[in-house]
Length: 485
Image 1 (cartoon, rainbow, N blue to C red):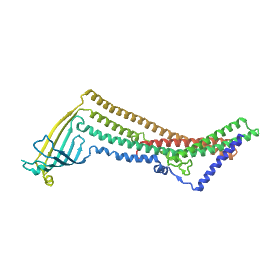
Image 2 (tube, rainbow, N blue to C red):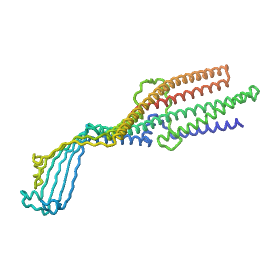
Image 3 (tube, rainbow, N blue to C red):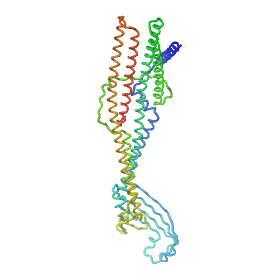
Image 4 (cartoon, rainbow, N blue to C red):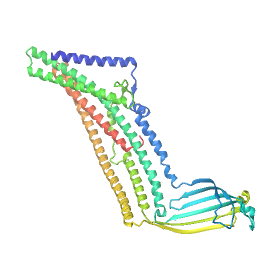
C-alpha cells in the first residue's frame, strides 16, 4: 500500500513537472537575468517608486533652509481717513484722507544682523482745511511724502551674532536631509530584498530539481532492497530503512516544492505581478565568480540609515540650540536713517526724494528678560542635555554599525570558505559516484552502492547550492554600505 502510494505521488509530481516544462517551452520561455529583474523592480515596484518620489521631494524641500537668510521683497498699500480731532484747535478740517504705499527689501544675515530697506510714498488730502495764516496752503491741504529708509538691528545676547538664525537654517536643512536619506534607505532595502528574492528562487528551483532526483534514487533503492527481501536475499530491516528514506525524501521534495511556490510568489510580488508562477528562466549561481570575490575589512562608508540618523541628530541639536537661545535675555542694538521729501506734485516728490532735506535718524538699545531667571536657566540646561543625548545616541548607532560591519565581513569570509568546502565535497562525491559507475560496468560493485552514492552526491550538491544562496544574501547586505545602488 505504501509502495503504491509512493509510486502514485512520484508519478504525479513528475508528470506535473513535465507538463509545466512542456507548456513553458511551447510558450517560448524567456531568460531573465538578475540585472533585468532589478530593472523590472525599479520600474514596477510601487514601494520603490514611492521612495524615489520622496527622495526627490525632500531634496527640493531642503531648499527651505536657504529662505531663512534669503533676501525678501515686500510691498503694502493702504487707504484710510480720519475725521477732525477736536483737541487740535489750531488746525480745522473736516477729515484727512491718506494713501500709504511701501515697497522694501529685508534680509537676515547669518550673523543675526537684520536689514530693512524700504521706500514709502504717502499721500495726504485734507477736506475743508482752514489755511488761514499758512505759508503754503496748497501743500498743506494736499501733499505727497517720499521717504527712503534703512533700518538695522543687531542682537548681542539672544540669537547673539546669529546663533539662532543659523540653528533655524540647520534645523530645516538637516530635517529634510534625514527624511530624504530615510526614503533612500527604504529604496535600497527594497532592491536588496529583491536581490535576495531572485537568488532564493534560483536556489528553490535547484532544490526541487535535486530533491526530485534524490527521491527517484531513493525509490530505486527501495525497489532494489524490496526485491532482494522478497527473494530471501535481503533483510527486512533494509526494506524498512529504504522505506524511511523514501518517505523522508518525499517530505523534502514536498518542502522544496512549497518553497519554490513561496519564492515564486515573492519574486512576482516585487514586480507587482499577482501570480505564483514564474515563467522566465533565471540565472544559475556563478560559482567561479563567487569564489574569486575579494573583501576588504575597511568599511566603504556609513549605511544610509546611519547617515539619516546623523542628519536627524544635527536637526535635533539645532532645535535644542533654538530653544536655548529663545530663553536667553534679549539685548539688541538698532538704528535707522531716512530722508523725507514733501511736495504737492508726486513726480517732484519722487525726483527729489534723496535730497538732504527732511532727514531723520535714531539709534538705540533694547533689553528684556523674564523675571523668573531660574526657570529660564532650567530650560537652557534642558536644551543642552538634549544636545548631549542626541550625540550619545548617534555614537551608539555608530558602534552598532561597526559591529554589524565586522559580523558581515566575517560571515562573507566564512560562507565563501564554506562554499569552497561544499564544492570540494560535491566534487569528491561526484568523483566517487562516477568511479562506482565504472566499477559497476566491470561487475565489481552493486547497483545498490551506486544508488547510495547518488544520495550522497545529491546531499552534497544541495549543500553547495545552499551555501551559494546564503553567500548571495550577505553580498546583498553589503550593499547597505553602497549609496549608489
